Length: 313
Ligand SMILES: Nc1ncnc2c1ncn2[C@@H]1O[C@H](COP(=O)(O)OP(=O)(O)OP(=O)(O)O)[C@@H](O)[C@H]1O
Image (tube, rainbow, N blue to C red; front, side, top):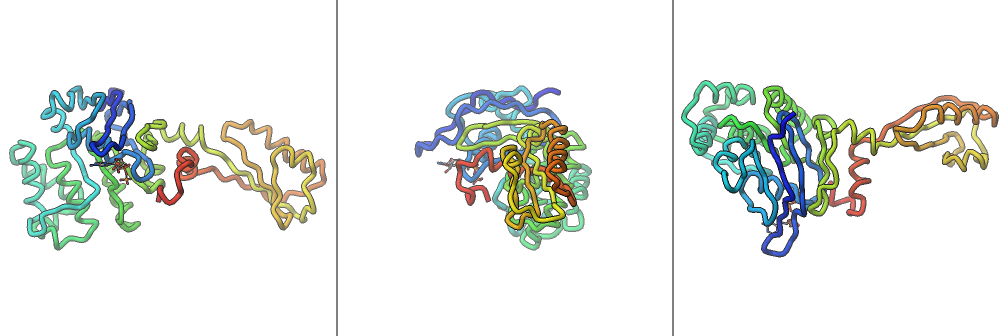
């Protein structure tokens, strides 16, 4: 698969002295959904803003569709649509007019058939003549997406697209994103909802303090960093954990009715079979066994765990 965005040794130090990005190198494949995760202030918006030409880097290069964003910014910008974090719409403008206007800003001529298709796909066609201030929050977000797609970009950046959006609307937005991807649009999204990244992303990048800690296919990330927790329910309470079982890493609940065991997802399954065999040898009767795999949120927390937890919410 070819890269549509090539980020090479990118750095940004703001005039204030803040080093927001430090030597970030990343290729983004055409047609993928990449989720960028990181605590507040990690540098996600700075990265997106540089690619979109809104902030200039202090080091490194970015190419979009082969065009250097500084030397050939016009060609690079045409390929990009950005849905910003903040909702900023002209309150008295009609929905359809603000989408037409944005398209014009990119130097594209009118294409009413495309705008109709776009508004219909975002369930905004019925509201095309409404003033933007008459729309709900979720509709306003969809207008932002329509604006960002008005010039048919190949890459769409969504900076926290569902912040403050209720669960139903959030799922609706995810559906829109999936449909865009099916049309071949490359999507880069930042989100604080780990469930969103877990559900939608093909690859996940984790940024912390301006450094790209890793970028991996989601399945690989879950497999590599994910841990499984095995819970063994017992028929009769166990007064104390036999020393050999404790040495193997088993834990006993305070009521003596549950054994817990953590292992990584690559662990040899025969290890668990042996463990259960050992329980039988000790005469411990097992009522039930359940496993739980760690989710992206737990993996993310373990990667940035030197950060205070509230910084991630
Ligand atoms: N215009 C600016 N001038 C000076 N410093 C800035 C500016 N914009 C961002 N920063 C700083 O750069 C760092 C990275 O900020 P950035 O907005 O890129 O983070 P983020 O990962 O998008 O955070 P959030 O999840 O809170 O949106 C922060 O320390 C921030 O204070």
